Image (cartoon, rainbow, N blue to C red):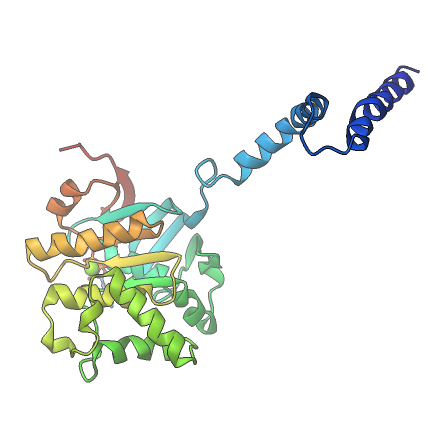
Length: 286
Ligand SMILES: Nc1ncnc2c1ncn2[C@@H]1O[C@H](COP(=O)(O)OP(=O)(O)O)[C@@H](O)[C@H]1O
Ligand SMILES: [Mg+2]
């Protein structure tokens, strides 16, 4: 009964006000039309609110990497035990610890160079436990990997180095390759150096090229294993600035380092490898 009355009154309201308004053949929204929008908004607002928060990246950041009770092995020897951590989209995370503490072994497990034998791990949508040999190239396409020793091919120019990676990862169109190469070189401030050979560049410049190479396939996560390990302090800062810019543009970075000066200069979330464990350490602001 009540429902019927209510329904009738709404119909009446609509016929009297909304349809009247449409009949009047004017495009200026009348006060009544505004009222209807207001009513509709009030009805929809709670669900819009919920939708927004469930889809908001800041409210619910996407996990790029998640490990639960994972153990890292080098053959039979246990390097890190019970590793539980997560890295969310957009974060810049340091992995610190002295030489031999397991940083590289940790990184290798993440890019499929060492198997995850124990525990649970997912990275950029791949299950590390179920990772097969044939999945590894696809995993690495979603990762940008940067090493301490640059690892550029010495027998060809920078442009050919980058083209080599694109071809190996399925690119065919030379114009598109050229555009992509220019774009990544620009991001690391090396746009004019494409014609040079690696040995014609300084260490810092070579590392920038290695960063550009890591960006070629638009990776979801960049893994950098001591990227400044072979560089002098000032060049390290320059390379670090490039990585910071890349992170500010929204990319997630996990960087192993033992360069504490850099960490103090660019503070960020820090994980430490020590005594077969990985744990988060709180940094004091400088
Ligand atoms: N290829 C390997 N085979 C066997 N043991 C290794 C290998 N590489 C590293 N290790 C051992 O794993 C431990 C951790 O090394 P690593 O992950 O390279 O540490 P970090 O990168 O922090 O210096 C060390 O004890 C090292 O001797
Ligand atoms: Mg190492």
